[in-house]
Length: 300
Image 1 (cartoon, one colour):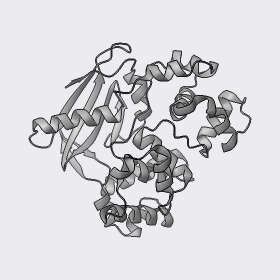
Image 2 (cartoon, helix red, strand yellow):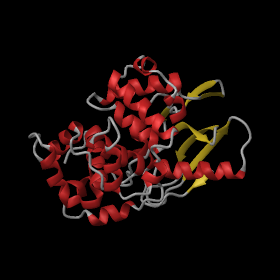
Image 3 (cartoon, rainbow, N blue to C red):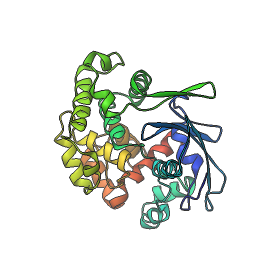
Image 4 (cartoon, rainbow, N blue to C red):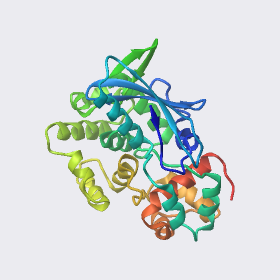
């Protein structure tokens, strides 16, 4: 399958954040990104590589199914790939609207075509954000990977086993000790199981939530036990690509903003929001550029 993203788009930069991923779950290596996706209970391995340039982008997607595929299945694969990498998002609008911030303008030249990815499902974004509460990203990813391999569906293709994020039904049936065995605290295990049960029971409708405006989604999420403002804002940013969302209480984000804008002087969440005012509806993406720049040790 060939997909033409909206230019500019740099696949290598956009997928680089997955370079340290578990190869049995989700990874980017030697120009190829791969992960398992779910099409109405059909497990499909997708492998994506760039076959174009930043200003004339094209992606080649290889699909390896566990069984037969229909035309509808192939169309769904395309939609999921477009959604994960936000291939229809116009980055040029972002660049054109952030012209007075010298730091970001410099990064635009060095990171041209970088776009932030989105989780395949909003459910995954919420659960991942709960897992990441008050611990390091490295520890959170380790716990999440154990959970995926222990409770996620899997398939063996070409002598390799691949795993997918567990769905609400699977997580709702677990006992607290099941999740605690993955490294989760008692409270986080409780939050995730209860959240999954509420989805299965119809008490929470993620599709309806996705159709609300960003502030309304954040507000609704905060009414769910175990989800505060940080978790809600992070889930909305990574799960819905709502770029106005800014998890200002995030210590990692505060650190990179302080590095680039305050000569490494500490920045509070209120100060961060003040700095972000000039980014407007692009705040989440602006911060993502700072995070990637920091990871790549880009100097201004």
